[in-house]
Length: 309
Length: 309
Image (cartoon, rainbow over all chains, first blue to last red; front, side):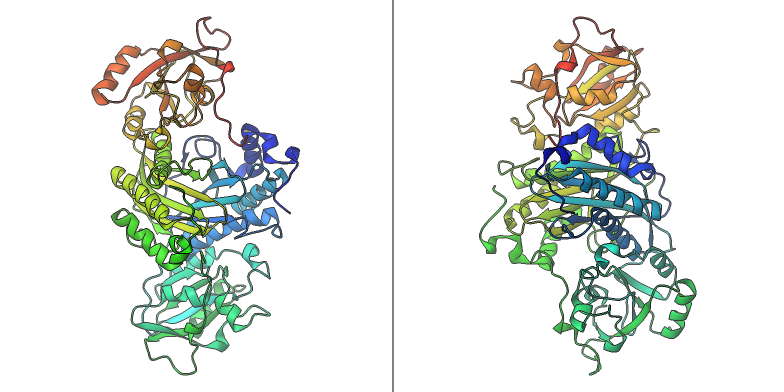
């Protein structure tokens, strides 16, 4: 659906602010608690957060993260899920979300309803209430920004730092072709997987893939090391060549390092008992810088997604 | 400063993503902790929140909340302070902020530096770290969205609900003319005042004025009541007529209800011992609907700021 209309009667302007906020509450339904625990006061009051609090923010922007080919529900779902994916990457549990929407007065009401119903669907699925937000005028664009509060559930927080030379490199799912396959808004954030991984001591570092493996893997690589990837082991999406597999963004899969002492086959066996439907691949290991075997991939030849190009 | 440039060398594009993020960390300086407690991981890990957590989000948008006449530092300061004002309105203490920036590739680096230095200045002044964020491309605009996590410090959370018929209506500071006087970005959020008010049992409900008294007062008015305002008591900014005082937005002052049994003069005396430099005015009281004295103001004749008009 094209988000904009020339017909005033079909646009958000027709409704006016008060009715628009009432409509948003209606679209969000039971996923939005009553004030002060939800929309309607200056702040939302959250339930107590017991573990260490986690905080993440990500937007979806018209022309960048979505266009008229993505259904409005899909835009709302994508916004929510890409934030959930960041919580998954730390092994956390999501607790509450707020959404700030900057939108052109000519945005279709139908589009907006779809967007909020998409948020509501994900909210219900993962049990994460939408507790507040803001709607403001922004001539010429749509920028929707979600902030998600989570909490640490495992005894520790799994971060991007902590991998060591000789650690195995694992990745969930398949990589590449996110845009063409519509994976970029249809994906499932790896929340259960992330929480399980954070609870296993042999997992040393983790992130979620957003800018392509070739780029994001750098953040996981320990100082003085480099990744030695096995080309044959890379889980490619159907139809993706190596460049797409390594360089396409928006995989929203988990990339993590497992202690070198562990037998990868054993780790994958334990994984399958828990997550029989989520593919897991051991794609290589970290070696000392300059000691990459000749048959391993040279990542320097590949690039991930560069923002602000 | 005009935020945009045609010269690539002066724009954010010239720097590229990695260097831009490094520059942002430099501009934020000590106000941005190291990952995972600050910028650099998928989420920020926050210190434990002891009181009930509060969450609020507000943007500043080019062409709506600022333009080229507001210095870039002022834009950053405004973004931070309007969120602090929401925490103040609940009597809370701000704990951590994240900032998502959607910006045109042609935004001047100088502008961006000023913006982040403005954020850093407010961060230092109020002791609230900027723990994370996002920067994304958004052709044709600038939308900066801050989410602020706070915590309740008083034994209770002061909300917009709770005022009763016969309660006094108080307001801090002076009202109106926020745009012309540059108050809209120069104001000080009433954090200390809000926390003090939340600690006093006779204060029953509170909000911060953002859309003008005439509009925002509705949210404080209890069911079956209406406000009876004393025109002479309204604290007007120099040069403001009644319409501007009641209808202009962005006052960022606290509006609250005090139990009718309390003597206003006594309350103001207690206030002055604590806040000798912040003006406080008792501007009227809530009366039963339909029983407004003839000399009291008829607010129906005045309007506040309507969003999405």
